[in-house]
Length: 351
Ligand SMILES: Nc1ncnc2c1ncn2[C@@H]1O[C@H](COP(=O)(O)OP(=O)(O)O)[C@@H](O)[C@H]1O
Ligand SMILES: [Mg+2]
View 1 (cartoon, rainbow, N blue to C red):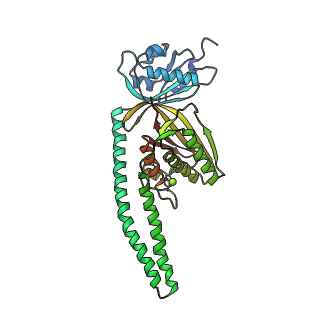
View 2: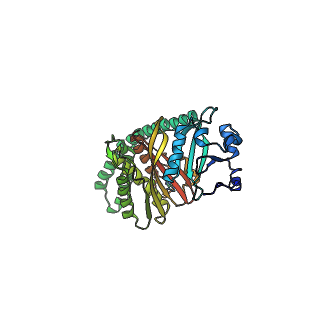
View 3: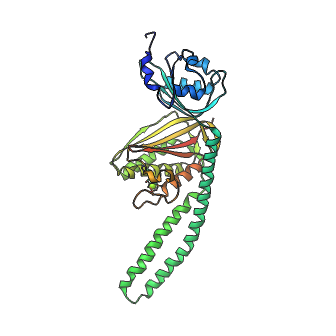
């Protein structure tokens, strides 16, 4: 291996990046720091470049650990919340992607962005309370609608028996059919409220079930798996997780009109906040599709009940999925652009 694996010019393109970026060489020496990272950490690149990461970030063992893992696994490590401190500076709460660079350099590329922990947790907590309030409202509303619906349907049936002409049945049938449709919508609004039954769950068995259901419904889609089979079993309700994942995967199939590629990916997720609690270890399940992406006008609302972007949609699939995953102490996140939509399900792992 040459003594200078990274010619200076390799990194000039990173200077103007607004993402804070750091490059380590195969020996763990800091070879490059872009201006955005200098600003983020409040340290001049001149101080950092040439120093060993172990030294510079000696007070950030979790960060160093993640770098080691990225190197040994040759895999991108995503950290959602991490405290990073440069010697002599206060720690910063950041999120980062740590990616091994291609051979032969064997370097490591680190991208960081700052997160204000108070803001983020407050926002998540706010969203969770809002959702709980929404669900409560909806549940009450569904009850209020269900009861009179039974009466309307019954009355239409009685009326039908008394009709003088057979041809008038057309009208009573409309009342009965529409009442049934509303009734089943209300049932679906009310059902996800059974208590979860926790047991040992292998997440890959859950995903394989969903995979075979999806392929049976729509053989034309391609469904690839990218599993981290070292993930341990979790305590969860497997039926609920199957239903949640199925709802998400079905949306992907529908958005792609049955033609396209879906990937099921599982990974360890480090430093995640769930239900306002930080977990050192969690699991990330991604359902990725290459369809058109979520329509702009509903992107922020897709987890709300009755929000749908498709003809005939009930807008309940994601609401239900979110509720079910929350009952398993997890959460769902979504990122979408045309050609690339990712639904990420986070679940806690025992530390
Ligand atoms: N993978 C996806 N790609 C594009 N749009 C999606 C995707 N998943 C969900 N959506 C959008 O979110 C909406 C809400 O989904 P959902 O809550 O399951 O209700 P429904 O499927 O009944 O419309 C969908 O109608 C669709 O517009
Ligand atoms: Mg749906």
